[in-house]
Image 1 (cartoon, rainbow, N blue to C red):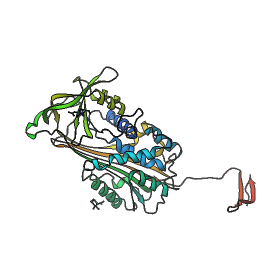
Image 2: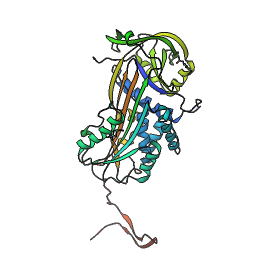
Image 3: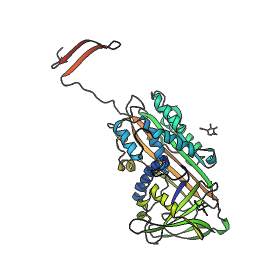
Image 4: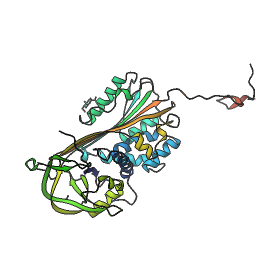
Length: 399
Ligand SMILES: *[C@@H]1O[C@H](CO)[C@@H](O)[C@H](O)[C@H]1NC(C)=O
Ligand SMILES: *[C@@H]1O[C@H](CO)[C@@H](O)[C@H](O)[C@H]1NC(C)=O
């Protein structure tokens, strides 16, 4: 099928009722999703006429996995990007992961996290243990000196966890045979059947006006039913509709956002979307009987995360000289690539969506120099007792 710019449709898969009554301050699910939604905004606004599919939770998960390994400014930037509190995110992340992967969601939401490390790379025990405890993270060792084989093993894992929807995430040329130390991967799979299905006989080819103004013929599904709908207003008085399509089981819905005025580009609404906005919609929702027509669609997108994360202030982790992941390992590593692939399929029965997010960590191309080329002090110390046996000051070394 011809690829379309399904721009007027901004689909968000939402989990309701995670924390019971909606709290004053954002929940940890919302904090992470907010950062991910800001990344989405960056990506969508840079490609205003293309389809974009993205998992906000996938980005938050990858950063959450790297966080216990980070120190100093590298850590501060991740924490402030995620708006996590300095000391206590892990307990909340553990709870969030548990809620998302609870038995009641088991047939519909599948989340998996993996750390793939170079065989000889000495990872700190506490880093591995924290990730295992918070995210049930699996750890595997690989031999990156064979990038082809290592990429295959990671891709097999992703393919398996996304039930074949993301067959490959990492390309061999993203891995460096000498320097790759760690690849952290998050995978999310979702399958939901509409609570109220569309009848295939009612799917008719109808016009759809793309973001660039061209009109395409697309298969449009329709049904006459009661849906929760709200009219919302963005700050400059821009009006848009929000329609909730619940999935079977009632904990997950798709929310569709459509500017009310036909000529308003979607890009004018996107900057206003945050978890707080989404929460405000739920208060405005009213059940209404409508004829709903939405296109059937499939979209498949790969996003490089470095530019959008950097624009949000998360920069040091990508720098060979500034990244500080001292709690992952004594060897200096930095993120050489962070990417996400996501796919969504919407049809009469429901939705299948999958996303895989990865961060690839490399060692420095050459270890840093420490050059003693100025006057220096030395001490010769017996370490077990602390006894200083000698000390000196050297202003002009001679031999
Ligand atoms: C894929 O999943 C199946 C079933 O859970 C499992 O038996 C198999 O080992 C998995 N393969 C990989 C490569 O992880
Ligand atoms: C509308 O939302 C309310 C509150 O969340 C819910 O109880 C109700 O089932 C929804 N109705 C429909 C038709 O989805």
